[in-house]
Length: 186
Image (cartoon, rainbow, N blue to C red; front, top):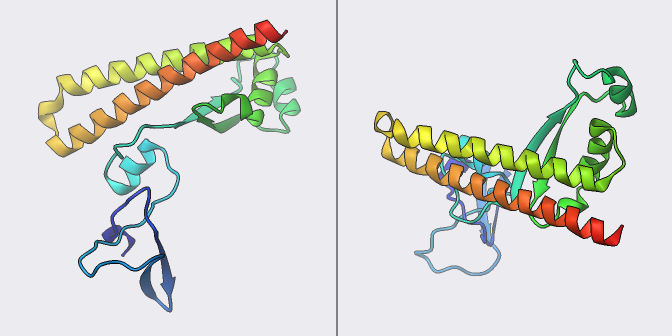
């Protein structure tokens, strides 16, 4: 039933199940002809496409970054031990808030084997730049073969890939800026 309720990021409703009935409640009175919508919550654009079949128009501000210790790393056992047995982790990288992602920064200290914030920011800059270039390649390939899929699907994927490319580029710039500002402070 939830699939019947459309998404609006600024929705002023609450959707809940009460005694096996779906109820949509507005926070303020609505005109009889007003379509009630719900906010699907904080999700990446990829999550929206996979779970809801669309990509929101608003700018992406979060990228989900997966990092892991390679079993071929000569210090694999030591690093995994320092990480409390964790071999890989998923991090939410929010634009404008990279410096607040403490868990990511602590993971990278162990992952890279350094305490140097400059090296950590440079690593993130390069990682985001590489991911951005990969998205560009995917977008070019998609557009080249777009006659094999439905127009709505292609439009959503193009919007997703362009949003992701833009966000990754901005995260790369943010990491560079943080590296440069750290050099000034250090």
